[in-house]
Image 1 (tube, one colour):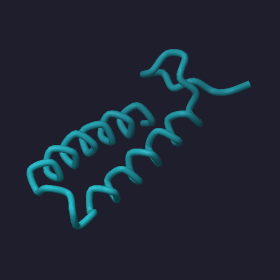
Image 2: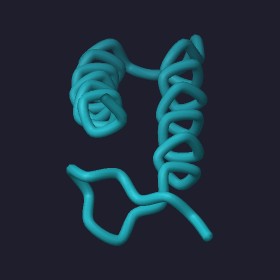
Image 3: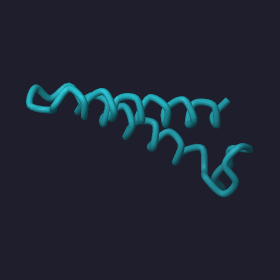
Image 4: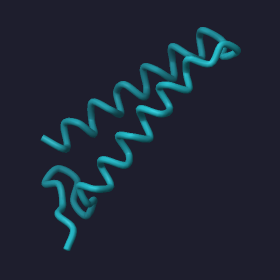
Length: 59
């Protein structure tokens, strides 16, 4: 039986870890040399915010 995070009803803790890993991979992808700087900054800010939310949900 999967445990559920108290801050995200119905979302198993394992799913939070998968989402966190996907966010980290996406952050790595923003290091691509051909990505325009404005897009890179916007993407990194959005992903960092999402990561903060996920990590807060895991606490």
